[in-house]
Length: 161
Image (cartoon, rainbow, N blue to C red):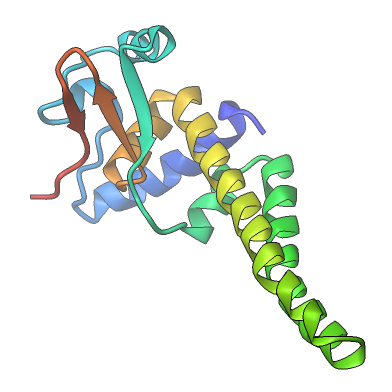
């Protein structure tokens, strides 16, 4: 799934939220107190290392993930959840049938599964933010991403009024 596939869905969400008075910017020049006027300049700074795109939100939004994720990211996320929660059930079942030592696989599988799920989510967010100015602005507004600019020694993130 590329930006052309995702952007219409994001545009619908942005338009609906703007009708409700949220005032989500659709270009970086409309972001208050943001040091870039052009998305291309922001991308250039990302490529050169002058700026870094960071995940800002701690929580993972499932509806946002389903809208932005590629099929590969969705498969990785589902595999991670299967390992996390299936590993718990398998560890408990194996410990009853064979040995309590199988309980030791629970934290290992949960850690591996959680890491897979988190990495798939982060990959979907970062790839989407780099693919389109509208999607970047939406993710910035929703607090999913922030921008760290080394030459200014400052991190920019959306601050609600």
